[in-house]
Length: 204
Image 1 (tube, rainbow, N blue to C red):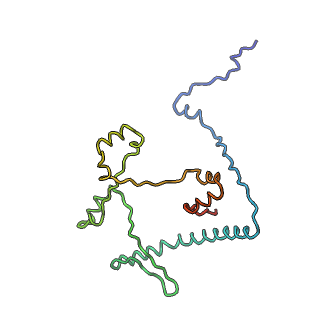
Image 2: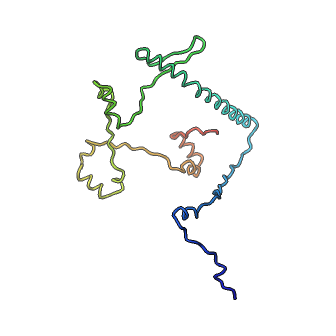
């Protein structure tokens, strides 16, 4: 009888960390899961024409957006130069009588909180009036899940809670709300729409 050990493959111990890592290298790409194609519903001729017009319009929109994206920075840059050369201007109208645009600036600025001291130093006098400090106090979310913290909070604040805090409540629909409402009758769905407006569907 042949020695069964002779059929076993000899596996050498890796001599280094790189050898160990290299032993697991593979060139096989992961299998991509194919997306399930949605069923295409046949539509009347006038609806199909509308679909064609929507798709054609989207192509034209992309071309238009590309043209705007390419040329807009040139116009804005020149508008900013005009603003720098004059006193404060909320808007700058540029072009000629037949073709012109109005560049309107917005009083919105983004900045890092860590840079506020340096910004105030640059502004100098009146910095506190120009950069308004907002304090939005929030109760840690874990308090709502921890009865012990809730009791501790109650003992500390007591009935004075309304003097220092305000509670703003709101609702949002569940992830499957649009699916679940179809379990209701048509009449109830119509009643819902008197109070709830669903976002406009997108056509891609």
